[in-house]
Amino acid sequence: MSDTLISLKNVCVHIGAKVALHDVNLAIKSGEIVTVVGPNGSGKSTLLRTLVSAIKPTGGQITRMPNLRIGYVPQKLHIDPTLPLTVRRFLSLPRRVNDAVAEKALNDAGAGDLGKRQMTGLSGGQFQRVLLARALLNDPHILILDEATQGLDQPGSADFYAQIAQVRQNFGCAVLMVSHELHVVMAASDRVICLNGHICCEGAPEIVASAPEYRALFGSGTQGALALYRHEHSHTHDETCAHDHAQSHHNENSHDNSEATL
Amino acid sequence: MTLLDDFMVRSTLAGLGVVLAAAPLGCFVVWRRMAYFGDATAHASILGVALALAFNVSILGGVLSVALIMALTVSALGGRGYAMDTLLGVMAHSSLAFGLVAVSFIDGVRVDLMAYLFGDILAVGRVDLLVIWGGAALVLLLLLARWSALLTSTLNPDLASAAGISPRREQLILSLALAMVVAVAIKVVGVLLIAAMLLIPAAAARPFARTPERMALIAVVIGAVSVLSGIQLAFQFDSPTGPTIVCVAAVLFCAASVMDFLRANRI
Image 1 (cartoon, rainbow over the protein chains, first blue to last red):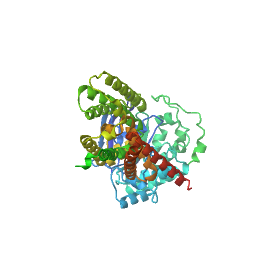
Image 2: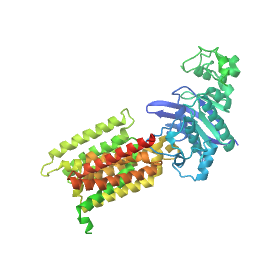
Image 3: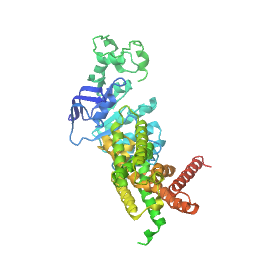
Image 4: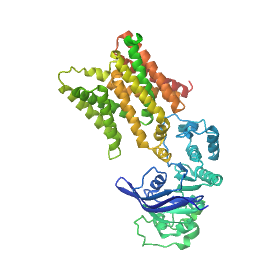
């Protein structure tokens, strides 16, 4: 199973006059977990929204496997309180699904008993699970999550990631996610993509963690990065890096407490 | 059709026709926070009336084209440095002003602008009735056909795109429907009160609904009750009919809010 689900070739995206992404080359194969990391404004959400066709690229090529089914969990879904909506009704948008399918998806997402609740009355964790359930309805080849745990507390987001792992086991789908929680990223991903307008570096977590581009972006002492966990010895001050990212070397020696977060 | 000879019957039917389209459409206006859009379209339609009178075309055609042009302009300019409410404000008030000035230049025709500002439901004729029900049916069919897509893009544009729905197209469809409702409702409640008939029944229905469909249905019922009792009350107290209908709707909204408050606090 190494068929490519989706691939980008030299993709550029402009948002207004600004270049949000340029020369992005990327391929996602079935079953793998890929995580996108990068500072704010680096185009992470833009990349995901391009993949789900919410944004049209201004250059380059996107190739999708024929009949590719994408399950998309957006970064944030504000539901206006003026819109009355039960969880069950929400799952039937835009395509009506029957009760059995809806119930299965809710159970798979760990939201089994929420069907009759109002969307606006859910807690943050419950809401994300419902979004996950909705993404699972069409039995996706790939699950795309955009900072799905934003706003959840630590146990809440740990639970959610455990659920994702469970889902991947059950469905065998690929997972592409954006995350700020570097320790989770490093522990759970097959591949990490470090983004800052373009792909700075990519590869297995430990390789990326030791890449100079990654260190330039996140610093070698960033809290929670597994970089410190395994590769502190390979630390380098790489000043040849072409980007002018803020360097953060001020807490290089703080790796001891970041281990505790794992 | 002797029944239609009675002006009370005609005006009641006209009111119900407007409500049938305005109430479900009003729900979208409420959900998408487009309240001001309804206002702006309505104000712009005065310019439509003036142009129609000047060029001697049908009022319906004039209003419909101006409302459509406004909707298209706003969605084209939207997101280019101006906030939506600023754009709508500029469009609404300038087209109202241009409309009023244009009307003053038209001589030979005695223009009763009051009739367009406040409507004259009691003067609805058979042709008007046909136009209102035709327009209402068209809007209702449009909403029914696109219901799921409209609802999804109202919920979240990205979710819609991911499902192959174009949020821009759905926005355009709503603008179209809005222009249509304003155009046919001018005679019934007038320009100044159309927005009220869009918003108030939908807002009053909110506390009683658990699903979007239910809310639209309840809004239609509340709108219909407002029309029926509004016309009766206006007849009894000799008050202006359009505003009376809106008053009844407003009272129903207050009652709904109070009931919701009592229920929430379990008094």
